[in-house]
Image (tube, rainbow, N blue to C red; front, side, top):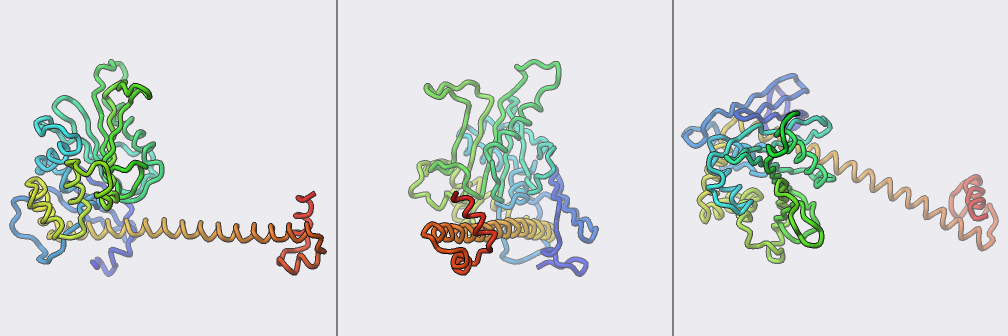
Length: 340
């Protein structure tokens, strides 16, 4: 565990991770210190790193995902990934331009540190890639909300609608959110009976990592994106190496990941992000457990009242019902009123 200024990074609450085009900024509010991780280093050419061990970062931690796929120097990796998701030639993405990596967050309650990779193709199409580790309620609705912002941002008052280009949202999620037996699902606007596509401007993809465990039974086991998803979801270097050996682009991504994993500042940022994720998961689990306990308590109370009702219905007196259930005289009178 990393200690900074006498404090454990794990014990600090990291409330903001801003990932811009060339830099990650992590701000710790507990001690007022700011840690800047400079992303201008070229991880392909760097020969000497600060840490020599066997550690490898998880590609599905959002800022690590951004390091691999959202860096100007790694466009070939990004293009290969997009080609696999969208099932089009890599030629489609030649001249691709990385633009603002995050959509404007007008609703500040979204505190999960989501880091998007947003790009524009030479034909003007916009693509937003988001990896989401933490389970999120109403994910489809949320996706359309942010898709609409991306779509709307293309024009200003006075522009004509023909300036609106296709917008594609790609969600890589570490939880199941679509009740379909496929890892990769794709959505458009179509007519219910004929399947006629009203317009091609909207396209949404969900890539659900937990479903990789059911590869033998899912319906899209031949999807070319699966190797990439297994790499992103891999928990061991051995698994990553195996995938790298059969896919040259994944090999390049793995080499970038290896180098980043040995950088001391990147490691510190990674530890901080992991701590934040664990804190959030702990809070959610605690809240869920509290809700379960509350439900059990409510269930016990309802069960006792049901027993009291039955005892009253068979003609037992007030004192006997009170002793049998532990309810007060006022409770029993209230139940009698309900029965009458």
